[in-house]
Length: 517
Image 1 (spheres, rainbow, N blue to C red):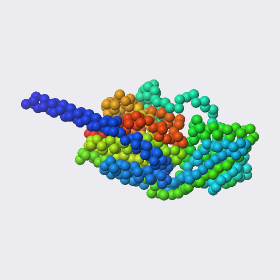
Image 2 (image 1 turned 90 degrees about the horizontal axis):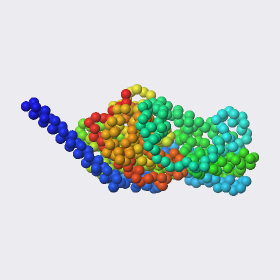
Image 3 (image 1 turned 30 degrees about the vertical axis):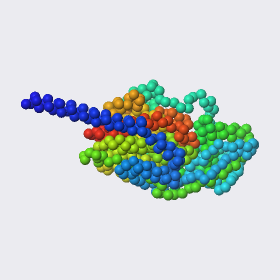
Image 4 (image 1 turned 45 degrees about the vertical axis):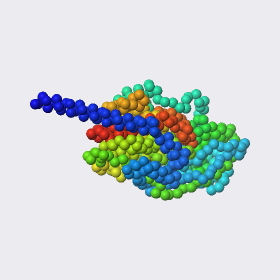
C-alpha cells in the first residue's frame, strides 16, 4: 500500500505541475495576443504626449493629464484608481509667450527656451550682452562684476566644444556591452550600461544632493538680481541645435526665483561668446511672459489596482511604476510618456485578457520625479516609514516586487537586479518564453536616478528595466525634441507585453520575491 501511495503521490504532483504549466502557458498566450496583436500602447503615448503635452510638476497641465490617466484606467475596469497628494508647496509654472533676438551687430533670431520657475521679464527688454564664463567662485565674481551688471544680459558658462556629428545619434546596446554587464559580480560602481552609485546614501540625502548639484547657482543668481541684470543665458552641448532647458529646480514656494533664464542652442551660444571674445558686445532683445502659482491639488500620484483573487495572497502586492511628470519644452514623449504608457498598457492587458492574478497588481504614476523623487518619496514615507528611521510599517512586507520604467522608449533588454542575487534564477525562468526577443539579459548591477531607488532603499525588491538607448541621451532627454517621433512602436509593444507577463508570473508565485540581505 505504501508503494501504491507513493506512486499516486508522484502522479498527483506530475499532473499538478502539468496543469500549472498549461495554465501558465495559456495565460501567457492570452497576454501575448492582447499585447502584440491588440495593442493600445501607441494610442496611450500619443494621447499623453500630443493631446496633453508637457506635464511639469505643479501645473494645471499635469493635473489635466492625471485626470485623463485616471479616467482611462477606470474605463478598462481597473478596480480602484485614485490620487494621493505628494506636495503642498510645489509650485506650478507656465509660459504664455517668449522671444529672444540679437539686434546688434546684426540681426539674429536666437534659438532659446526658458528654464522653468524663472521670473517674468515684465515686458520687452533690451540690453548689452556680457560673458561670465566661470561663476563657481562667487566672491571672485562679486569682486570683478559688482556695479557693472545693471541693464545687462549675462551669458554664463564655457562655450561648447566643436562637434562634427561623426558619432551616431541613435544606438542600441551591442552584444558586447550586454555581456560585459552580465559578467558583473558586484553591483556598483562599475555598471557599463549606466550610472551606478550607493542607493542608501542617495535616498538618505536626496534633498541635499539635489540642492548641491541642481541649485548650486542660487547665490550667483541672487547676486545678478541684486545688481540689476536683465536676464541669463546658458547652454548644454546637445548637437545639432537642440535646446536643453531642464529646469532651475527652484520649484518650492520658499525657493528664490531667478531672473528670466534661457537655454540656448550650442551653436548660438558659441557665436555670441565668440563675438564677445573679439570685443564685440551684442545687444539682446527679449521678453518672457511666464506665470508662477501654487495649487497643491495639482500635486498627485496616480494609483490604480487590480485586486488579487487568492484569499490568502490578495493582500500582497506586485507594483509597477513610471514617473508621470515631464519637463516643459516638449511633450514628454520619451521622458517619461513612454514608460507611463507601457505601464498603463500592462494594466489594460491584464484586465482585457481576463487572467486572474493571485496577488493585487498596483500601478503608481509618480509626480515630481524630476525634482528628486518627490512623489515616490512622499508615497514611501506615508506607507513604509520615514527615511533615516529604522521603524518600518507592516505594508513594506506586503510588497512582493516593484518594476520601474524610465529610460526612454527603447526596447527592454533585461533587468538591473540591484545587487539581489536571489532573484536571478526566478527572472531567468520568467523571461525564458521571451528569449527570442532578447529581453532576458540580467545584470547584478545597480542603476540609479529614478523612482526604483526609493523601493530599493526600503529593501523592497525594486528593479529598473534595461532599455536600448536609442537617442535618449543624445536628442530627447529633457530637450525641446522629446516628441512622439522618437517613440518606436515595436519596442513599446514588446515592453508592455513582456512586463505584463512578468507581473502576472510574480503575482502567481507561492512566495514573495526574495529580499536582499
